[in-house]
Image 1 (tube, rainbow, N blue to C red):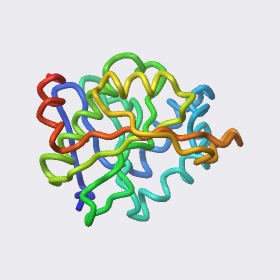
Image 2: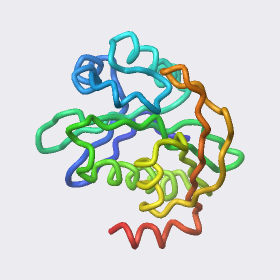
Image 3: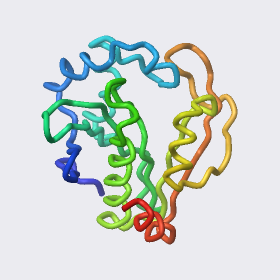
Image 4: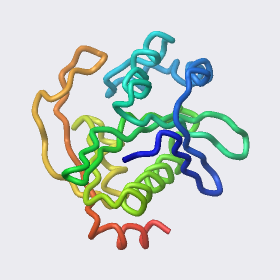
Length: 185
């Protein structure tokens, strides 16, 4: 089970569960409409953020905010969801990074901390990530991280733009974690 008070950090970033008090700070990051091209919610309004956060406050997923430890600024968010204790797997997703922080390496650091927690603390067998097949930057980043591309689910998810996306799945298995961890550091 995921701890609801989970804190993950390294020397540069800190991840902690989202709070309602974060909404106004997140709203400052979410005004660029291009962030939501491949996303299920448009977070450029307070109502959009509130709707997107409901599953986190209902205990359906753990949504974490990404914080720069030097400045204390919020940079984005990612979450754990679709947890199956029986199958020993979890999904990492619901991820977005503010435009000013994209390309800085914080997404890879965040994913590493989350995978480290899932494999080493939760003892899971499998981590899943997914994205829109048209989201080439995300797909490239997931492959660069060393995840395995698995397959495409057609017309899988309705996006906030009204388009139905084809979703591509990626994974990392427990027996691949040591190699991944070594290559990351």
